[in-house]
Image 1: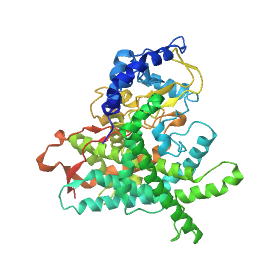
Image 2 (image 1 turned 120 degrees about the horizontal axis):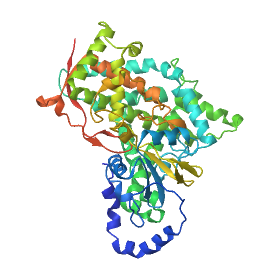
Image 3 (image 1 turned 90 degrees about the horizontal axis):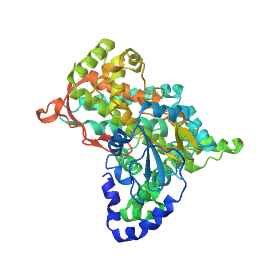
Image 4 (image 1 turned 45 degrees about the vertical axis):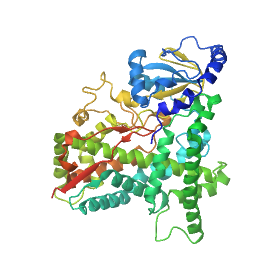
Length: 504
Protein backbone atom coordinates (compact mmCIF):
# COMPACT_ATOMS: atom_id res chain seq x y z
CA UNK A 1 0.00 0.00 0.00
CA UNK A 2 1.40 3.40 -0.93
CA UNK A 3 2.13 5.94 1.75
CA UNK A 4 -0.03 8.94 1.00
CA UNK A 5 0.93 12.41 2.15
CA UNK A 6 -2.13 12.48 4.38
CA UNK A 7 -0.77 9.42 6.21
CA UNK A 8 2.66 10.99 6.30
CA UNK A 9 1.38 14.07 8.07
CA UNK A 10 -0.97 12.34 10.52
CA UNK A 11 1.60 12.19 13.35
CA UNK A 12 2.05 15.95 13.07
CA UNK A 13 -1.65 16.45 13.61
CA UNK A 14 -1.39 14.38 16.78
CA UNK A 15 1.04 16.85 18.35
CA UNK A 16 -0.39 20.32 17.68
CA UNK A 17 0.71 21.76 21.00
CA UNK A 18 4.33 20.70 20.47
CA UNK A 19 4.35 22.25 17.03
CA UNK A 20 2.80 25.48 18.23
CA UNK A 21 5.52 25.80 20.84
CA UNK A 22 8.28 25.15 18.31
CA UNK A 23 6.94 27.23 15.42
CA UNK A 24 8.09 30.69 16.57
CA UNK A 25 11.68 29.56 17.19
CA UNK A 26 12.03 27.62 13.95
CA UNK A 27 10.30 30.27 11.88
CA UNK A 28 12.54 33.06 13.16
CA UNK A 29 15.63 30.91 12.67
CA UNK A 30 14.79 30.07 9.05
CA UNK A 31 13.92 33.67 8.19
CA UNK A 32 17.32 34.80 9.42
CA UNK A 33 19.06 32.96 6.57
CA UNK A 34 19.90 35.38 3.78
CA UNK A 35 18.23 34.39 0.49
CA UNK A 36 19.50 35.10 -3.04
CA UNK A 37 18.38 38.34 -4.63
CA UNK A 38 16.04 37.01 -7.30
CA UNK A 39 14.22 33.81 -6.41
CA UNK A 40 11.65 32.05 -8.61
CA UNK A 41 7.98 32.51 -7.72
CA UNK A 42 6.79 30.34 -4.86
CA UNK A 43 3.43 29.41 -3.31
CA UNK A 44 2.85 30.69 0.23
CA UNK A 45 4.41 28.35 2.76
CA UNK A 46 3.55 27.22 6.25
CA UNK A 47 5.96 27.41 9.15
CA UNK A 48 8.24 24.38 9.55
CA UNK A 49 6.75 22.21 6.78
CA UNK A 50 6.84 24.90 4.07
CA UNK A 51 5.00 23.55 1.02
CA UNK A 52 5.15 19.87 1.93
CA UNK A 53 1.41 19.76 2.45
CA UNK A 54 0.87 20.85 -1.16
CA UNK A 55 2.47 17.74 -2.66
CA UNK A 56 -0.74 15.79 -2.11
CA UNK A 57 -1.17 12.05 -2.60
CA UNK A 58 -0.33 12.28 -6.34
CA UNK A 59 2.59 14.75 -6.45
CA UNK A 60 2.97 15.04 -10.24
CA UNK A 61 -0.67 16.14 -10.50
CA UNK A 62 -0.43 18.55 -7.57
CA UNK A 63 2.76 20.10 -8.92
CA UNK A 64 1.23 20.63 -12.36
CA UNK A 65 -1.69 22.44 -10.76
CA UNK A 66 0.70 24.68 -8.81
CA UNK A 67 2.73 25.37 -11.96
CA UNK A 68 -0.39 26.57 -13.76
CA UNK A 69 -0.59 29.34 -11.16
CA UNK A 70 3.05 30.05 -10.34
CA UNK A 71 4.76 29.26 -13.62
CA UNK A 72 6.91 26.52 -15.17
CA UNK A 73 9.86 27.41 -12.93
CA UNK A 74 8.81 27.71 -9.31
CA UNK A 75 10.41 27.26 -5.92
CA UNK A 76 8.94 25.04 -3.24
CA UNK A 77 10.13 24.96 0.34
CA UNK A 78 9.93 21.36 1.52
CA UNK A 79 10.77 21.75 5.17
CA UNK A 80 14.35 23.05 5.17
CA UNK A 81 14.96 22.03 1.54
CA UNK A 82 14.65 24.42 -1.39
CA UNK A 83 13.24 22.55 -4.38
CA UNK A 84 13.04 24.08 -7.85
CA UNK A 85 10.17 22.47 -9.78
CA UNK A 86 10.45 22.53 -13.58
CA UNK A 87 7.33 22.06 -15.72
CA UNK A 88 8.27 23.14 -19.23
CA UNK A 89 10.46 21.68 -21.97
CA UNK A 90 12.56 24.86 -22.23
CA UNK A 91 13.24 24.94 -18.51
CA UNK A 92 14.06 21.22 -18.51
CA UNK A 93 16.56 21.82 -21.33
CA UNK A 94 18.25 24.57 -19.34
CA UNK A 95 18.63 22.28 -16.33
CA UNK A 96 19.51 19.03 -18.14
CA UNK A 97 21.60 20.45 -21.01
CA UNK A 98 22.73 24.05 -20.53
CA UNK A 99 23.60 23.53 -16.85
CA UNK A 100 23.90 19.75 -16.94
CA UNK A 101 27.20 19.60 -15.04
CA UNK A 102 26.09 22.02 -12.32
CA UNK A 103 22.98 19.91 -11.65
CA UNK A 104 24.61 16.48 -11.96
CA UNK A 105 24.68 15.82 -8.24
CA UNK A 106 22.10 13.88 -6.27
CA UNK A 107 20.87 15.00 -2.85
CA UNK A 108 21.23 12.53 -0.02
CA UNK A 109 17.79 10.98 0.49
CA UNK A 110 17.23 8.86 3.58
CA UNK A 111 15.28 5.91 2.13
CA UNK A 112 17.33 5.41 -1.07
CA UNK A 113 20.47 5.76 1.03
CA UNK A 114 19.39 2.90 3.31
CA UNK A 115 18.21 0.66 0.48
CA UNK A 116 21.21 1.24 -1.78
CA UNK A 117 24.12 0.66 0.59
CA UNK A 118 24.77 4.30 1.32
CA UNK A 119 23.82 5.39 -2.21
CA UNK A 120 26.48 3.23 -3.89
CA UNK A 121 24.20 2.59 -6.88
CA UNK A 122 24.16 4.43 -10.21
CA UNK A 123 20.85 6.24 -9.71
CA UNK A 124 21.43 7.87 -6.33
CA UNK A 125 25.22 8.04 -5.96
CA UNK A 126 26.58 11.59 -5.63
CA UNK A 127 28.32 12.96 -8.69
CA UNK A 128 32.04 12.24 -8.74
CA UNK A 129 34.69 9.70 -9.66
CA UNK A 130 32.92 6.80 -7.93
CA UNK A 131 29.71 7.41 -9.87
CA UNK A 132 31.61 7.77 -13.16
CA UNK A 133 33.39 4.47 -12.58
CA UNK A 134 30.30 2.39 -11.77
CA UNK A 135 28.27 3.92 -14.60
CA UNK A 136 31.08 3.14 -17.04
CA UNK A 137 31.31 -0.46 -15.78
CA UNK A 138 27.55 -0.96 -16.13
CA UNK A 139 27.36 0.52 -19.62
CA UNK A 140 30.33 -1.37 -21.00
CA UNK A 141 29.42 -4.74 -19.52
CA UNK A 142 25.61 -4.71 -19.62
CA UNK A 143 24.00 -1.75 -21.34
CA UNK A 144 26.08 -0.99 -24.44
CA UNK A 145 24.43 -1.53 -27.82
CA UNK A 146 26.65 -4.54 -28.47
CA UNK A 147 25.80 -6.09 -25.09
CA UNK A 148 22.08 -5.48 -25.51
CA UNK A 149 22.17 -7.21 -28.89
CA UNK A 150 24.01 -10.16 -27.35
CA UNK A 151 21.01 -10.79 -25.08
CA UNK A 152 18.66 -11.18 -28.03
CA UNK A 153 18.22 -14.93 -27.61
CA UNK A 154 17.18 -14.45 -23.99
CA UNK A 155 14.51 -11.92 -24.94
CA UNK A 156 13.16 -14.02 -27.80
CA UNK A 157 13.13 -17.21 -25.73
CA UNK A 158 11.22 -15.62 -22.85
CA UNK A 159 8.79 -13.95 -25.27
CA UNK A 160 8.07 -17.32 -26.90
CA UNK A 161 7.41 -18.80 -23.45
CA UNK A 162 4.95 -16.01 -22.70
CA UNK A 163 3.10 -16.56 -25.97
CA UNK A 164 2.90 -20.32 -25.32
CA UNK A 165 1.70 -19.77 -21.76
CA UNK A 166 -1.12 -17.52 -22.94
CA UNK A 167 -2.03 -20.09 -25.57
CA UNK A 168 -2.39 -22.74 -22.87
CA UNK A 169 -5.09 -20.69 -21.17
CA UNK A 170 -7.70 -22.09 -23.54
CA UNK A 171 -9.49 -18.77 -23.82
CA UNK A 172 -9.92 -18.31 -20.06
CA UNK A 173 -9.07 -15.13 -18.19
CA UNK A 174 -5.33 -14.55 -17.75
CA UNK A 175 -3.48 -12.12 -15.47
CA UNK A 176 -1.36 -10.35 -18.06
CA UNK A 177 0.23 -8.11 -15.44
CA UNK A 178 1.75 -11.04 -13.55
CA UNK A 179 2.90 -12.65 -16.80
CA UNK A 180 4.70 -9.48 -17.89
CA UNK A 181 6.40 -9.06 -14.53
CA UNK A 182 7.58 -12.67 -14.65
CA UNK A 183 8.88 -12.26 -18.20
CA UNK A 184 10.89 -9.11 -17.49
CA UNK A 185 12.16 -10.56 -14.22
CA UNK A 186 13.28 -13.74 -16.03
CA UNK A 187 15.08 -11.78 -18.75
CA UNK A 188 16.97 -9.69 -16.22
CA UNK A 189 17.74 -12.70 -14.02
CA UNK A 190 19.26 -14.58 -16.95
CA UNK A 191 21.25 -11.57 -18.12
CA UNK A 192 22.42 -10.40 -14.70
CA UNK A 193 22.52 -13.59 -12.63
CA UNK A 194 22.90 -16.37 -15.19
CA UNK A 195 19.63 -18.14 -14.47
CA UNK A 196 16.03 -17.65 -13.40
CA UNK A 197 14.83 -18.21 -9.83
CA UNK A 198 11.86 -20.28 -8.68
CA UNK A 199 11.06 -17.73 -5.99
CA UNK A 200 10.67 -15.03 -8.63
CA UNK A 201 7.35 -13.77 -7.30
CA UNK A 202 8.78 -13.44 -3.79
CA UNK A 203 11.52 -11.32 -5.31
CA UNK A 204 8.89 -9.43 -7.31
CA UNK A 205 7.10 -8.57 -4.08
CA UNK A 206 10.35 -7.23 -2.67
CA UNK A 207 10.83 -5.08 -5.77
CA UNK A 208 7.29 -3.69 -5.46
CA UNK A 209 8.03 -2.75 -1.84
CA UNK A 210 11.34 -1.27 -2.99
CA UNK A 211 9.66 1.01 -5.54
CA UNK A 212 6.93 1.95 -3.07
CA UNK A 213 9.42 2.98 -0.40
CA UNK A 214 11.52 4.94 -2.89
CA UNK A 215 8.36 6.87 -3.79
CA UNK A 216 7.46 7.59 -0.16
CA UNK A 217 8.09 10.98 1.41
CA UNK A 218 10.45 10.86 4.39
CA UNK A 219 9.80 13.66 6.87
CA UNK A 220 13.36 13.37 8.17
CA UNK A 221 14.79 14.11 4.73
CA UNK A 222 13.15 17.52 4.67
CA UNK A 223 12.81 18.31 8.38
CA UNK A 224 15.72 16.56 10.14
CA UNK A 225 14.59 17.45 13.65
CA UNK A 226 11.28 15.70 12.93
CA UNK A 227 12.91 12.46 11.75
CA UNK A 228 11.25 10.70 14.69
CA UNK A 229 7.99 11.00 12.73
CA UNK A 230 9.31 8.43 10.23
CA UNK A 231 9.89 6.00 13.08
CA UNK A 232 6.42 6.67 14.44
CA UNK A 233 4.91 5.91 11.03
CA UNK A 234 6.83 2.65 10.77
CA UNK A 235 8.69 3.90 7.70
CA UNK A 236 12.14 3.27 9.17
CA UNK A 237 11.15 -0.22 10.28
CA UNK A 238 9.79 -1.10 6.83
CA UNK A 239 12.92 0.23 5.15
CA UNK A 240 15.33 -1.67 7.42
CA UNK A 241 13.33 -4.89 7.05
CA UNK A 242 13.30 -4.69 3.26
CA UNK A 243 16.98 -3.72 3.12
CA UNK A 244 17.85 -6.88 5.07
CA UNK A 245 15.66 -9.10 2.86
CA UNK A 246 17.23 -7.76 -0.32
CA UNK A 247 20.71 -7.92 1.16
CA UNK A 248 20.26 -11.59 2.08
CA UNK A 249 19.02 -12.35 -1.45
CA UNK A 250 21.94 -10.56 -3.11
CA UNK A 251 24.47 -12.16 -0.74
CA UNK A 252 23.14 -15.63 -1.62
CA UNK A 253 23.45 -14.84 -5.35
CA UNK A 254 27.04 -13.63 -4.99
CA UNK A 255 28.05 -16.60 -2.85
CA UNK A 256 26.55 -18.95 -5.44
CA UNK A 257 28.72 -17.32 -8.10
CA UNK A 258 31.85 -17.39 -5.92
CA UNK A 259 31.43 -21.12 -5.32
CA UNK A 260 30.74 -21.77 -9.02
CA UNK A 261 33.88 -19.87 -10.02
CA UNK A 262 36.02 -21.85 -7.57
CA UNK A 263 34.70 -25.05 -9.15
CA UNK A 264 35.84 -24.04 -12.60
CA UNK A 265 33.74 -21.24 -14.09
CA UNK A 266 30.25 -20.69 -15.46
CA UNK A 267 29.69 -24.23 -16.71
CA UNK A 268 27.63 -25.40 -19.65
CA UNK A 269 29.63 -23.06 -21.89
CA UNK A 270 27.63 -20.12 -20.59
CA UNK A 271 28.81 -16.58 -21.08
CA UNK A 272 29.73 -14.71 -17.87
CA UNK A 273 26.74 -12.88 -16.42
CA UNK A 274 26.74 -9.46 -14.74
CA UNK A 275 27.69 -10.84 -11.32
CA UNK A 276 30.64 -12.73 -12.82
CA UNK A 277 31.77 -9.56 -14.56
CA UNK A 278 31.44 -7.48 -11.39
CA UNK A 279 33.42 -10.06 -9.42
CA UNK A 280 36.16 -9.83 -12.05
CA UNK A 281 36.13 -6.04 -11.77
CA UNK A 282 36.37 -6.35 -7.99
CA UNK A 283 39.33 -8.70 -8.35
CA UNK A 284 41.11 -6.24 -10.64
CA UNK A 285 40.27 -3.18 -8.53
CA UNK A 286 43.49 -3.52 -6.55
CA UNK A 287 45.50 -2.68 -9.68
CA UNK A 288 43.18 0.08 -10.94
CA UNK A 289 43.00 1.98 -7.66
CA UNK A 290 39.18 2.03 -7.70
CA UNK A 291 37.65 0.66 -4.49
CA UNK A 292 35.02 -1.88 -5.46
CA UNK A 293 33.51 -3.70 -2.49
CA UNK A 294 30.72 -6.24 -2.26
CA UNK A 295 28.24 -3.49 -1.37
CA UNK A 296 28.93 -1.88 -4.74
CA UNK A 297 28.18 -5.17 -6.51
CA UNK A 298 24.89 -5.48 -4.63
CA UNK A 299 23.97 -1.85 -5.29
CA UNK A 300 24.48 -2.29 -9.05
CA UNK A 301 22.43 -5.51 -9.04
CA UNK A 302 19.70 -3.64 -7.20
CA UNK A 303 19.72 -0.88 -9.82
CA UNK A 304 19.46 -3.36 -12.68
CA UNK A 305 16.45 -5.10 -11.16
CA UNK A 306 14.58 -2.09 -9.80
CA UNK A 307 15.20 -0.07 -12.96
CA UNK A 308 14.49 -2.90 -15.37
CA UNK A 309 11.65 -5.01 -14.04
CA UNK A 310 8.91 -2.66 -12.87
CA UNK A 311 9.40 0.11 -15.43
CA UNK A 312 9.59 -2.31 -18.36
CA UNK A 313 6.65 -4.54 -17.46
CA UNK A 314 4.44 -1.55 -16.62
CA UNK A 315 5.22 0.15 -19.95
CA UNK A 316 4.13 -2.95 -21.89
CA UNK A 317 1.02 -3.20 -19.71
CA UNK A 318 0.10 0.45 -20.33
CA UNK A 319 0.67 0.07 -24.09
CA UNK A 320 -1.57 -2.99 -24.32
CA UNK A 321 -4.21 -1.27 -22.17
CA UNK A 322 -4.25 1.80 -24.43
CA UNK A 323 -4.59 -0.39 -27.53
CA UNK A 324 -7.53 -2.24 -25.97
CA UNK A 325 -9.20 1.09 -25.18
CA UNK A 326 -8.54 2.30 -28.73
CA UNK A 327 -9.61 -0.45 -31.22
CA UNK A 328 -8.65 1.51 -34.39
CA UNK A 329 -5.06 1.81 -33.11
CA UNK A 330 -5.05 -1.90 -32.28
CA UNK A 331 -6.26 -2.83 -35.77
CA UNK A 332 -3.69 -0.58 -37.44
CA UNK A 333 -0.86 -2.12 -35.43
CA UNK A 334 -2.06 -5.66 -36.12
CA UNK A 335 -2.14 -4.91 -39.83
CA UNK A 336 1.45 -3.62 -39.74
CA UNK A 337 2.62 -6.69 -37.83
CA UNK A 338 0.82 -9.06 -40.19
CA UNK A 339 2.28 -7.37 -43.28
CA UNK A 340 5.85 -7.55 -41.94
CA UNK A 341 5.65 -11.08 -40.52
CA UNK A 342 4.36 -12.58 -43.78
CA UNK A 343 2.82 -15.60 -42.08
CA UNK A 344 5.74 -16.48 -39.79
CA UNK A 345 4.85 -17.75 -36.32
CA UNK A 346 6.73 -15.06 -34.38
CA UNK A 347 7.94 -11.50 -34.78
CA UNK A 348 11.73 -11.31 -34.42
CA UNK A 349 13.95 -8.38 -33.53
CA UNK A 350 15.01 -8.16 -37.18
CA UNK A 351 11.44 -7.15 -38.00
CA UNK A 352 11.17 -4.25 -35.55
CA UNK A 353 12.92 -1.59 -37.65
CA UNK A 354 10.24 -2.10 -40.32
CA UNK A 355 7.44 -1.27 -37.88
CA UNK A 356 7.05 2.52 -37.55
CA UNK A 357 3.57 2.28 -36.06
CA UNK A 358 4.76 -0.08 -33.32
CA UNK A 359 7.45 2.43 -32.41
CA UNK A 360 4.88 5.24 -32.47
CA UNK A 361 2.60 3.27 -30.12
CA UNK A 362 5.42 2.84 -27.61
CA UNK A 363 6.44 6.51 -27.82
CA UNK A 364 2.85 7.56 -27.23
CA UNK A 365 2.60 5.15 -24.30
CA UNK A 366 5.76 6.57 -22.72
CA UNK A 367 4.38 10.07 -23.25
CA UNK A 368 1.05 9.41 -21.55
CA UNK A 369 2.38 6.98 -18.95
CA UNK A 370 5.85 8.22 -18.11
CA UNK A 371 7.36 5.50 -15.89
CA UNK A 372 8.91 8.02 -13.48
CA UNK A 373 6.60 11.06 -13.67
CA UNK A 374 9.02 13.04 -11.50
CA UNK A 375 12.67 12.51 -12.34
CA UNK A 376 14.96 11.63 -9.44
CA UNK A 377 15.94 15.01 -7.90
CA UNK A 378 19.08 16.77 -9.09
CA UNK A 379 21.13 19.05 -6.84
CA UNK A 380 23.19 22.08 -7.82
CA UNK A 381 26.90 21.88 -7.03
CA UNK A 382 27.38 25.65 -7.28
CA UNK A 383 25.47 28.92 -7.31
CA UNK A 384 23.81 29.31 -10.69
CA UNK A 385 21.36 31.49 -12.62
CA UNK A 386 18.46 29.66 -14.30
CA UNK A 387 15.85 31.52 -16.38
CA UNK A 388 17.12 34.74 -14.74
CA UNK A 389 16.59 33.39 -11.22
CA UNK A 390 19.39 33.06 -8.67
CA UNK A 391 19.79 29.60 -7.17
CA UNK A 392 22.10 28.76 -4.29
CA UNK A 393 24.45 25.81 -4.20
CA UNK A 394 22.57 22.80 -2.82
CA UNK A 395 19.24 23.74 -4.42
CA UNK A 396 17.38 20.61 -5.47
CA UNK A 397 15.58 20.37 -8.82
CA UNK A 398 12.62 18.19 -9.68
CA UNK A 399 11.58 17.86 -13.33
CA UNK A 400 7.89 17.04 -13.80
CA UNK A 401 8.34 15.17 -17.08
CA UNK A 402 4.78 13.78 -16.81
CA UNK A 403 3.36 17.33 -16.95
CA UNK A 404 5.70 18.31 -19.79
CA UNK A 405 4.57 15.27 -21.79
CA UNK A 406 0.96 16.44 -21.44
CA UNK A 407 1.57 20.15 -22.01
CA UNK A 408 -1.22 21.35 -24.36
CA UNK A 409 1.06 24.08 -25.73
CA UNK A 410 3.32 21.32 -27.11
CA UNK A 411 0.95 18.43 -27.78
CA UNK A 412 -2.34 18.62 -29.63
CA UNK A 413 -5.07 16.69 -27.77
CA UNK A 414 -2.47 16.17 -25.07
CA UNK A 415 -4.50 13.72 -22.97
CA UNK A 416 -5.54 11.51 -25.88
CA UNK A 417 -3.79 8.36 -27.12
CA UNK A 418 -2.76 9.21 -30.71
CA UNK A 419 0.30 7.26 -31.89
CA UNK A 420 -0.02 8.91 -35.31
CA UNK A 421 1.49 12.09 -33.86
CA UNK A 422 4.91 10.37 -33.92
CA UNK A 423 4.80 8.94 -37.46
CA UNK A 424 6.13 12.11 -39.10
CA UNK A 425 8.00 13.44 -36.09
CA UNK A 426 11.67 13.33 -35.18
CA UNK A 427 10.84 13.52 -31.46
CA UNK A 428 12.32 10.59 -29.58
CA UNK A 429 12.71 9.52 -25.94
CA UNK A 430 16.52 9.27 -25.81
CA UNK A 431 17.02 12.54 -23.95
CA UNK A 432 17.59 14.98 -26.83
CA UNK A 433 13.98 16.22 -27.08
CA UNK A 434 12.95 17.85 -23.83
CA UNK A 435 9.22 17.58 -24.47
CA UNK A 436 9.55 13.79 -24.01
CA UNK A 437 11.78 12.67 -21.13
CA UNK A 438 10.64 9.24 -19.88
CA UNK A 439 14.28 8.25 -19.28
CA UNK A 440 15.61 11.65 -18.27
CA UNK A 441 18.51 13.36 -20.03
CA UNK A 442 22.10 14.43 -19.65
CA UNK A 443 24.71 12.85 -17.42
CA UNK A 444 22.14 11.46 -15.02
CA UNK A 445 19.80 10.12 -17.70
CA UNK A 446 18.91 6.43 -17.54
CA UNK A 447 21.69 4.38 -19.18
CA UNK A 448 19.38 1.41 -19.80
CA UNK A 449 17.13 2.90 -22.51
CA UNK A 450 18.07 0.43 -25.25
CA UNK A 451 17.80 -2.53 -22.89
CA UNK A 452 14.26 -1.58 -21.84
CA UNK A 453 13.00 -0.59 -25.30
CA UNK A 454 14.25 -3.85 -26.85
CA UNK A 455 12.06 -5.85 -24.47
CA UNK A 456 9.08 -3.50 -24.87
CA UNK A 457 9.09 -3.67 -28.67
CA UNK A 458 9.52 -7.42 -28.99
CA UNK A 459 6.96 -8.43 -26.34
CA UNK A 460 4.25 -5.97 -27.39
CA UNK A 461 4.68 -6.87 -31.07
CA UNK A 462 4.23 -10.58 -30.45
CA UNK A 463 1.30 -10.20 -28.04
CA UNK A 464 -0.65 -8.09 -30.52
CA UNK A 465 0.40 -10.22 -33.50
CA UNK A 466 -0.63 -13.53 -31.96
CA UNK A 467 -3.80 -12.68 -30.04
CA UNK A 468 -6.99 -10.72 -29.92
CA UNK A 469 -7.73 -9.54 -26.38
CA UNK A 470 -11.08 -8.92 -24.72
CA UNK A 471 -12.01 -7.82 -21.22
CA UNK A 472 -13.80 -10.36 -18.97
CA UNK A 473 -17.58 -10.39 -18.49
CA UNK A 474 -18.33 -8.61 -21.75
CA UNK A 475 -16.85 -5.27 -20.63
CA UNK A 476 -16.02 -3.10 -23.63
CA UNK A 477 -12.43 -2.07 -24.22
CA UNK A 478 -13.31 1.62 -23.95
CA UNK A 479 -14.47 0.95 -20.36
CA UNK A 480 -11.10 -0.39 -19.15
CA UNK A 481 -10.16 1.20 -15.82
CA UNK A 482 -6.89 3.10 -16.21
CA UNK A 483 -6.52 4.18 -12.57
CA UNK A 484 -2.92 4.61 -11.43
CA UNK A 485 -0.99 3.37 -8.43
CA UNK A 486 1.56 6.04 -7.62
CA UNK A 487 5.04 5.38 -6.28
CA UNK A 488 8.44 6.08 -7.74
CA UNK A 489 7.05 4.24 -10.79
CA UNK A 490 3.42 4.78 -11.84
CA UNK A 491 1.76 1.41 -12.37
CA UNK A 492 -1.74 0.39 -13.33
CA UNK A 493 -3.74 0.15 -10.11
CA UNK A 494 -5.66 -3.01 -11.03
CA UNK A 495 -3.96 -5.93 -12.79
CA UNK A 496 -4.71 -6.28 -16.49
CA UNK A 497 -7.05 -9.28 -16.75
CA UNK A 498 -7.79 -10.32 -20.34
CA UNK A 499 -9.35 -13.11 -22.36
CA UNK A 500 -7.02 -14.01 -25.26
CA UNK A 501 -8.10 -15.51 -28.58
CA UNK A 502 -5.58 -16.73 -31.15
CA UNK A 503 -5.63 -14.67 -34.36
CA UNK A 504 -4.56 -17.60 -36.56
